[in-house]
Length: 358
Image 1 (cartoon, rainbow, N blue to C red):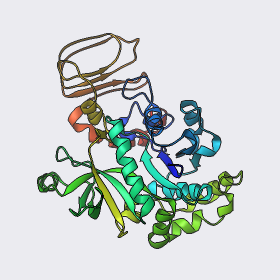
Image 2 (image 1 turned 180 degrees about the vertical axis):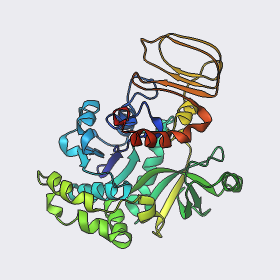
Image 3 (image 1 turned 45 degrees about the vertical axis):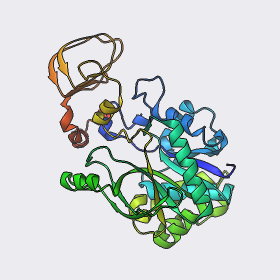
Image 4 (image 1 turned 45 degrees about the horizontal axis):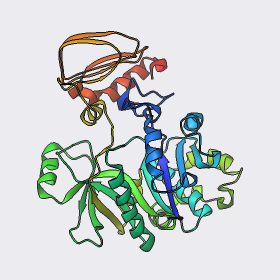
């Protein structure tokens, strides 16, 4: 697949993984799984089974360029796209598509986050090859849909049509983060998938969609097409990228386009958005505890997460369904089932002018 390229989005902060994930070192650069590799390294290595390393690009915030180079030393500077501002996923994807189309007019792209967990990598790569084959032959925008295992209210859902072509189904509509009763109904119907946020399309197909549905973004970023993949690219992006509207690819394109498709997939996926999702996806002890720490003495501790420096002794008793996250300068002790409040806590810290802890 000489025309196959991958753009990995790695510019987010991962605020729901605070205090481990910080502005200066967000979760994609952390060994959050405790396996000796960061999430961005795991993601990069996964895509080496799909295309050569020269065809893998990282889109990140400019302040993280050096960290990307430290974690992925095989990349050239031209493979690291540096955003000067955080404007959500639509401008990020348009930038990557314009750059790759300039490199190869027949570029067939995978767009994926840097911080997802994929447990069945062979199945994942085979699913992507199926999607790439379809997008290469059709003017189609594909998104991978995950067969839901429970009525999760934190995910977007895809209502897909039953008629399929080689396992590829048309998308009827998207629904963002439904309430519990609606999520239960979606699960029972069998007509809905979780939206994994992993996209496949030709560069020319997504750019045509931008032209039709989000022309302002394309007008701004394509004002000087000859600059892409030259020394003039970064100055142009630094000046013009912040002018783009801040909007997600789902709202800008996917919910408006009429050529959107999905492949119902099952490859052990998690978006790893929260501490609770890490608890679900990780190995646990006999009391259902996830322990990422050095020496521990625990009694009557169940269903909890304990994360601490390897050189610190942790002693705990009488905890059920709690998070104990010790990052040296911050200690978080919090009910695991209230983790959605962590983002609000970080906002309160900011209001108190304690930015050094963010």
